[in-house]
Length: 126
Image 1: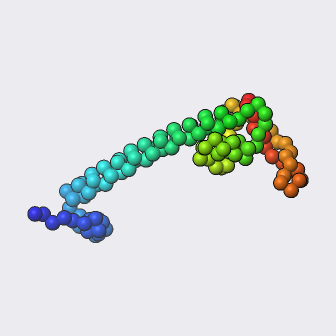
Image 2: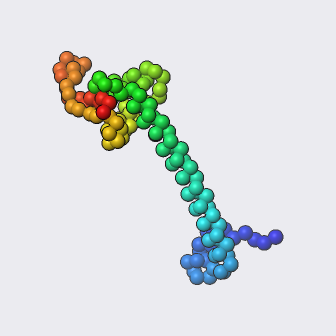
Image 3: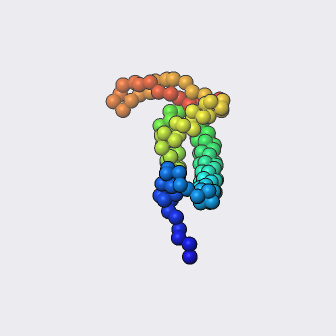
């Protein structure tokens, strides 16, 4: 049975300039196959994440109405209906929808919890 050469030994042989050409070819082939497998897995994960984002974007669009609502109001409505979302996720999808021209936004004032009015952004269907 042939002795296995560890990666450490291969790297040291590369540094010292004493590596066998066959060992280097075998090692490089193995590493390239690992890179290809890792890149393919990353593509699959990215596609899955994009699909989830598109689904959430369509869901957020369903909660935007003709009447102006803040991102907090939209998020609260979604949570009340059983969706697991955060204000940040809703805000990101609202921004994408505004850039796509499906939703419009405008600044306005809303009464705060302390009775004072504060600036807010209202989202409506475009």
